Image 1: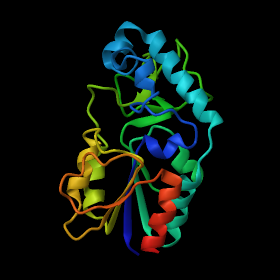
Image 2: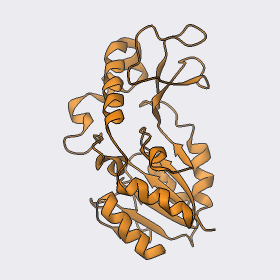
Image 3: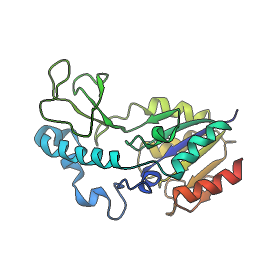
Length: 226
């Protein structure tokens, strides 16, 4: 069974009503990144950070997977599918995908700020002041913030290197280090990119570009490979 490795970004979840971060009208136009998504923000204005992620979590609970998510899950019948996502939502899992690696953390989980391996599933959408880890530390969102390392990259790189087909959905490939994953494909591996915008992080690579939104683009992609 061929190995299909898929890198997904915010564009795939946008069609489910999840706000993107960088696009026009995205969250970074509403919020200063350093005030809600950095270790410094957590240190200086914890209540704002918790409120920001509580709102994201509440919106996620009201959202549903879309056709692109379901199409990727369906492809498991014909391919060994591994999804590497920049998204912190759980829409891939809810659509039925079995193998999902989250590069930037998971919105519905919280963790101890001292022991990064101490991770909890959050019951509901609200992380409250006074919710403590076993060691008595205030639990924080299980999110990779700006300025923090992306430990899941160590797992992502070998997965990309093993790909028989590499697919990028809903990202312009300008967010690093995730954008650099495309450079770890083998020379003979075909690369497909589905995104309505102009490709950014591709350079001179030989890429099959499908300039459509995720759901429609997945239909074209499936026709090409199945």
